[in-house]
Length: 166
Image 1 (tube, rainbow, N blue to C red):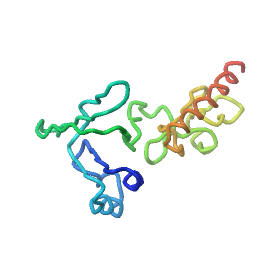
Image 2 (cartoon, one colour):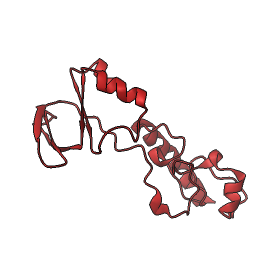
Image 3 (cartoon, one colour):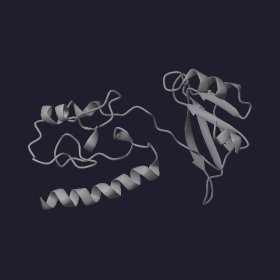
């Protein structure tokens, strides 16, 4: 919605069937009613083209039909709002949405359940596993923005040096 206020047109490509699994009905209705937005379900980017800068974007429907190439100079990507943490197999404390809990967000019970061996509490970006840090979108309570993730990573580097000196 924000981009549709300033862009000539917004093409919203969704790999799945639609937005219902990840967005409020109110926002979906606003998107569907906006003449400045075209919702394209079952569609994904296939090509980014240009000479030194983005000039065209190609996409295709999942069924292989309806390939389109449009003159587009900007692409914004949202790779998903669900944390891909199943592979952790229960070795770190997670919140209800499966984002990794760190620092002050870890409850005393979670620290005890993790058999925290240190006398200090976890540092700001430290997980329930000592000396393992999480930053960016996977972290519970993060801002879910690239700039924030970069800042968190920079801050975590200092903490890594601190734990290595312990």
